[in-house]
Image (tube, rainbow, N blue to C red; front, top):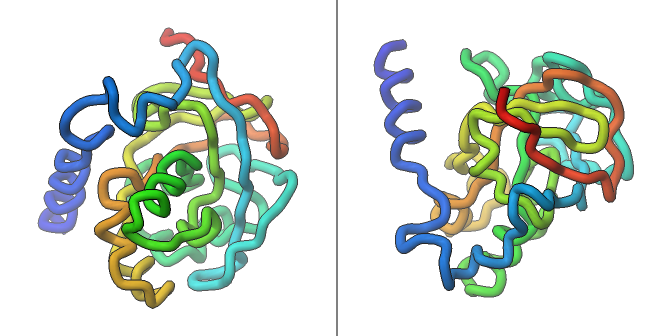
Length: 192
C-alpha cells in the first residue's frame, strides 16, 4: 500500500501544465483567464467500468459522489476502490483534446478521454487546490487526472497514454450538488 501511495505521489509530482517551456506563446495561450472563466461543452457518464460514455445535455451532480448514472457515483468504476480525494468527477479541456489532434499525435474524440466534463476557456490545472463552480454546482479541484494504461487498452489505440500524459485534465470532488447543463459557466471561486 505504501508503494502504491508513493507511485501516486510521484505521478502527481511529475505532472506539469503546460508542458515545459511555459504558457507565453505556447499552444495554451488561448485558454481564458481565471477571472473570465469558461464554459461547459460536454457532459459524459458511463454506467459501469469499460461501458461506452454517453453524452448528456444535463446531469444531476450528487454531493460527495459524482454524476448520477456514472460508474464512479455508483462506486463501480475501475478505480472506485482506490483511496483518496478526486474520485467523484473528472474534467478535461477541449483545447487539450484539439491540440492532440492538431499535432497529429492521435485521433481522439472528447468522449473517448472518458472524462465526465469537458470545458472550454478555463485553465483546469489552475483549479487544483481551489473551489470552482460549474453553473450552480460547486467542486473542489483535488488533483491532476493523468491518463492510465487502462484507457489506451480500452480504446485499443496506441499512443493515447503518451499524447495525454501532460494534459489529462483534473479530478474533482463535489462540494455542493445540483444540476449541470451544457453551456454553464465554469469559474474559479475566490480563495477563502
